[in-house]
Figure 1 (tube, rainbow, N blue to C red):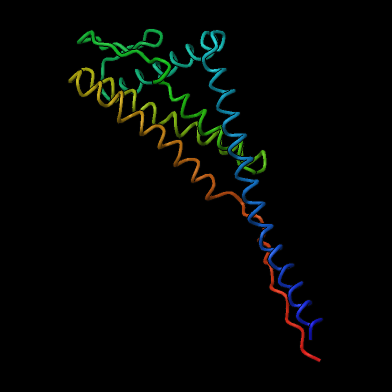
Figure 2 (cartoon, rainbow, N blue to C red; figure 1 turned 90 degrees about the vertical axis):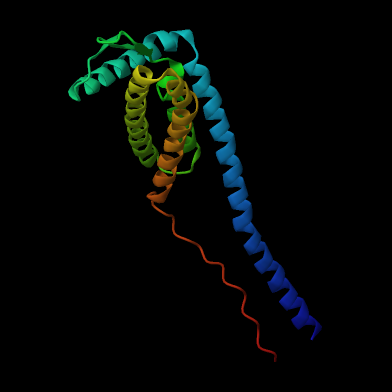
Length: 202
């Protein structure tokens, strides 16, 4: 009888340990994600503020956004022209300048860092980064064009949308793209832990 109780206790301990392993693995995975995510943010944001990166990448990218925005405005009957990173209205002379916080790069860095940190195949990460970046920059073009027209209409509304509304929406766009990427990632096969079968008394 004592041996049976000891055997049952051993089975219970073994089953308890099996249950703890998935929780421990989940904790380690989460910890690894946070470490890699924070490290990626620090590295990418540090690169973003370097002068050489600003001169050879950020400024030309801002000029490209200004050119695309001016062309899109022209397609819908506007009179905007781009001069470098500045979009100017020919009729009013009012202009908006695409600066560092207006190019969507910060949101892309957040999204890229999250995808790098998440345990997934490199191919899936690359697909997510490309599609997520395109989605963020598409919304960013909408932001630039809307701010251009708001600046023509009312400077108070322009400052409000520029400083608060659009900043939050761009970051939210990055979050939505990350969640959608998670939703369509292939799922690994689940492992089911079966409880030990009780031995029949002899």
